[in-house]
Length: 400
Image 1: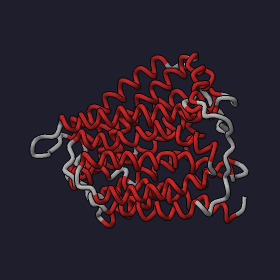
Image 2: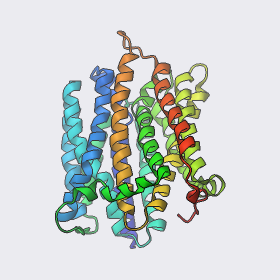
Image 3: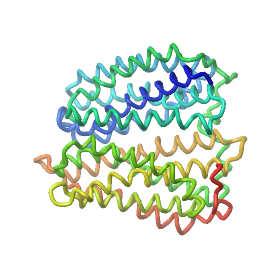
């Protein structure tokens, strides 16, 4: 791969996640402070992203058959920039939902597009892709620190930054190496939803893993939507800067995965990830910036364990169980079910829980809010440890 192509792909990934990181974690604070949104309305705004994640594979499947991927990426980002501009002009939380839904329908397919464009132009995915994908994590760290230092996490600036980078990515996309369509023939809905991967459910342990993945994404959505406002309410300053430590932790624990696999095996890797989620939510609930800020730092730093040990380990486990023929469909099915169905349920439930624990003076009982995802994660952990018993992957080789 030419160095110029590598740089283009790294910049593409950086701009993609810079755009996403600018608004996603801060949107709940913005809605509450600037649009006086209720808990239900905040939950619905995050639900829009999950709806888009469910629909995006269908958009991507059509694009794969008729258009070059880099052109689709460019058009979606330019249209998305226009919708972000509309979002920046909205003063009503009800109207905000419909426009953010439209934007998410443009943005969600780009997550898969940037990956597929990268994969088509690298010689060795296992060696080259991590150095490209890590730029997304670097971008998330960079933009959240920028927002923290500028102290604009609750202002329309979070969307204005996204407008700028979305336009940049839209223009850059048309200069990327040509990535023509590879798929032919009519769109097969069964392939889009990963129907062939349903055969994996014959294995009880995989079925338990799948159900657990969907279920743990319910509390995951609480983190994405409410960690920022909860930390602010506790009195923490420079919240975005401190939350970026979670992405730093993510990089560190990613490097530990091969070692942990050889020592723990897949069951306890997944189990440790679930235990970390429970501890994390309790830390968010009991931590206080004035008297016990270290507890909040624990909650933030556990992000690496929570995300890598469960979700990344889960991707590897799925890869080993699926086999070559249905590998892509199996990963697509997991993504659709977790980020679509699981986080969709979580966004709706989170909004309901937030509304129920916020009084007339707009003061939220955050301990009660965080107890709910902690309880869900605890139930998932118990059921997982009882019913998951896949001996064939007790010691997954690091090469996987």
